[in-house]
Figure 1 (cartoon, helix red, strand yellow):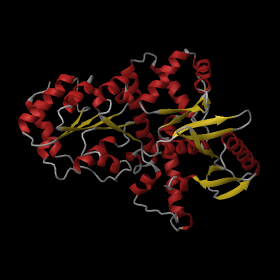
Figure 2 (cartoon, helix red, strand yellow; figure 1 turned 90 degrees about the vertical axis):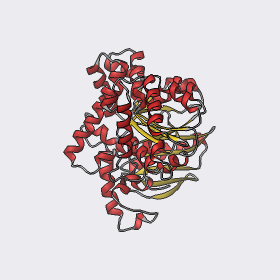
Figure 3 (spheres, rainbow, N blue to C red; figure 1 turned 135 degrees about the vertical axis):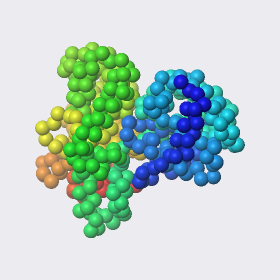
Figure 4 (cartoon, rainbow, N blue to C red; figure 1 turned 60 degrees about the vertical axis):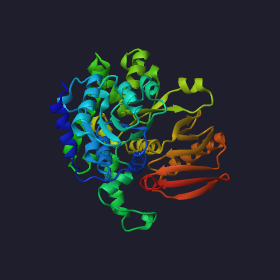
Length: 428
């Protein structure tokens, strides 16, 4: 129950907020630009990706704002269990009474999706024009139709992912520039890249040993599955659902249809669609559609599945090899997603192109991922497939991302670029 003593504790906790050693995330400068405008800043993303940390970094940046004007609340705090939207108003009123703030107020609300109808209260308070809201949430319900209706035109959203490879190197204090291909740091960068490929980019994973990493990643998976999905959507067949998720993550980068999944698990197509929508809502997986100018064909063709983090996928999947090609393709997808690209795949009768990048009404880039291109037949096959898609979409340049091969070749009057994945991840 909310009372003045509890709000006093929350105010004191805000004053005592401390940050352990952290890096400035790539999204930080964008978020900072919006601190002085009224629009609600919403930070969404998978659990443990660093949303709370970046929120506290923003709080610490408010140098010229009196501490009486700032309140931070983490709604996963055990003292705040079972709060209602009416309690939000009580917190606000007690905060005003206790602190008597002058000027703009800053409310940092962490994991706000725990409160039902929170968006209606925020809309009402937003209209008063003397309060800035910074919000985080671990599922896409923050972007639901109800939320969108309540706060249309009043918010700006930032998606948080686990570390990019640039951020990962920054975490280990490794500075790189465009000369890295010929630098003495290249072996160091590649060594860290191999760890990144295997263990992913969750911030707390980087500095612990392999056994601890696997255990913690499995805990992350359990939290996402049970707290963000099973509990929220009241899934009854929990064991069946968990097997379904593990199957999807084991088979990242493969094309899958709802009907083939129905045949594998015996679920109805509607149930499979619901399960996948829950996984997307929790940011655990992403779907990539087949590119076609026909919307109907896009919707009926199989889709490709990718995971939010390669380390998380490795910690829980059934795999019989290192699957480096799948992991590499997944990392390419995540980097494109971080850059807000509109992503598809394309497939003809004989060949497939991993990533088709669309901007506006045009296809702007084609990307193929081939981990081991040293084999002559493999290289010829990948080039042939890319050339076919370049012809289909009228492009003169294509990109093949590799493990190590770097170069450029002209084939049939078209340019094929080859770039190692670790280097591609460091490019602007």
